[in-house]
Amino acid sequence: AGSLQRLLTSRELACVYTNYSLLKSKKLNINEYFLLYALSYCLILRMAYQIRNLEKGDFRKGYLNLLTQLTTVGEISEEDFSARLKEMDESPDYHIRVIEDSASGKIVASGTLLVERKFIHQCGKVGHIEDVVVNVDTRGQSLGRKIVDDLKRLGQELGCYKVILDCSNSNVSFYEKCNMTNKGIEMVIYF
Image (cartoon, rainbow, N blue to C red; front, side):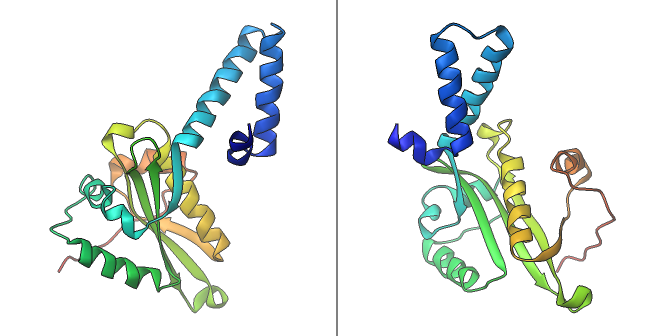
């Protein structure tokens, strides 16, 4: 019970104990049963997937392989990975968040928040969400939404007055489900 208490909020723990008591006394109706089932599923997901900052050891946990599901990555040695991560970690404006599957030890989702410092809006800051990807084998479990919500929360905590992102037309509905609004058109030039 002690390890369960460390993983859950007090409200979640109260729900677990209440539902367990109702189940034992056979006072659950069908709606309450499904509520208990949904809560249990959410708790299992919460324990199975840990969201955190990218770490040096994630090179061996499949981080770069995950990124290949988003775009081209190229050949990057562990030494190059560590050097680039060190550069990013030294910047207060660069934040890569990952979700690790605690059962497999693999990185299954990732996203980046870049903070742009501006003069407008009283020296305001804008958060840019980039490189959101979820492993094809773990899609459909709301991990993409979890990453995006985490990056939005982080942007707000860092004092950003807005958080923006670019996406393809095929991903617009996903980001709308994350409470983001289609606000414009992206322009680009590649070098």
